[in-house]
Image (cartoon, rainbow, N blue to C red; front, side, top):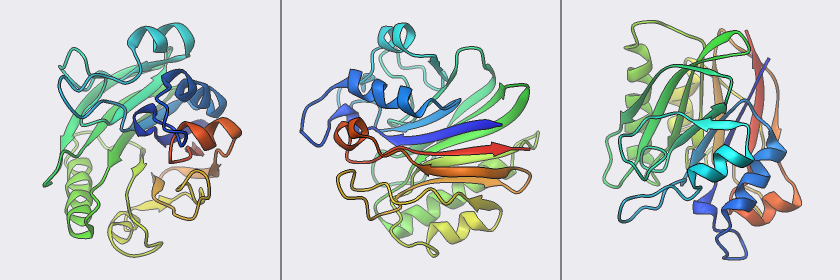
Amino acid sequence: MIKVASYNMHKSVGTDRRRNPERTLHVLCEVDADVIALQEADRRLGRRASVISPHLLEEHTPWKPVPVTMRAASMGWHGNVLLVRKDAQIVDCEPIHLPTLEPRGAVAADVRINGTMIRVVGMHLDLSGLWRRRQAHAILAHIDAAATPLPTVMMGDLNEWSRRSGCLRDFARDFTLADCGASFHARRPVGRLDRIMASRDLTIVDAGVHDSAAARTASDHLPIWAKVKL
């Protein structure tokens, strides 16, 4: 069994308009997943430095970042970060370039966790429905082109308000969507913008939204999670 989670951390700026990376880490520790996909984890300007400093992650959490970027200050790719348990083996990783008019991207990693090899993709898709579908097609094509097929989990902020159409229809052709629930806005969740999807060779055992007092103030999104197994 592997627990995965996705969280648009909103650069650690909470609903109280305060930036507090330690609060973000507190929420992640509450979720306690084996693999976490973060969105909006880097600052968008300048060196695009990571909002969570490496020493905070190293000293106060059980996770390590997947090294998908060559930027010294950044932890991810266009704000997308994958975290895995420190005892997990990162076999391969890479950024996925997406067609876009604004800075968007996805990240992928092949990871051995609890004796199981899985492929994980984290993403943050466009606000435009047309570009979301183009980006979904690019991610699916990237997965299809992989030399070695693996059980795959894809997750992130899809920015898709529809429950069945748009990019969700594209992803649903080969992936099962976890029934996590509404995660946006954190103070009164009505939108299922954040999604977790698993390939057909994985079983989604359980899924949900992490709705704690800390999570309701740490970001404008709530974290979502799912438990999967072969």
